[in-house]
Length: 227
Image 1 (tube, rainbow, N blue to C red):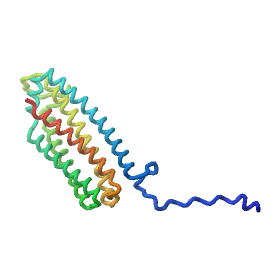
Image 2: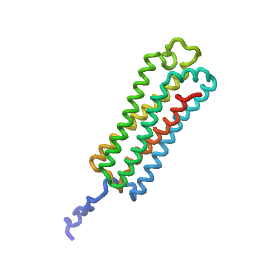
Image 3: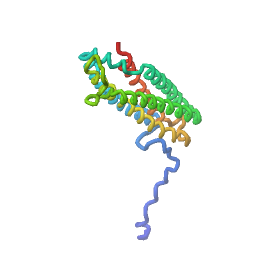
Image 4: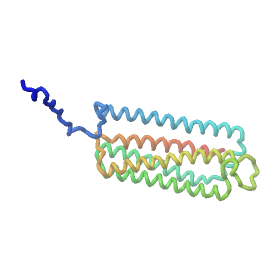
């Protein structure tokens, strides 16, 4: 045997040109990948529930200690705008469900339409919240030391507005985060990257969006419908 034969390089392994780019190398099947992704999202949503849960508990304790102030303060909120935002988010939940369903059925155009509709609902929600905040700033109904509303018959109303801005402001930030994630998903949907085999990002963003909507369902009566 010649020396050149002994030193010849080993043949290269064939390239896997047919590899599915939507399936990560550490998963055996799309089903396994989807289940793992969903478990991860549920864990993340659990931390979000703990975050808002702490605010709910703090709100409940302060309401019990200053019930008259909370009842008086909530009259400064516009129930009609709060109700409008509730309807808008409920509609957005439906459009998000339809977006996930359309993606799972290979209906690209329908997926795009429903994602755009959900984004539009989110934008409407933030616009309404902008006008609500504008009124609060104009009237001096601000949190903590910045509270400057005059003529209050009941003291300590600033405590209510401290929680109001913390809870609705944090929720608005989650709306913005959802819009960013949804825009990314929409871009992929327009490119036709989703199919009945792989639509995990649409489903995960949908789960996140439903939590955002659910939190508002609790915030609306908690802040606007105090009795």
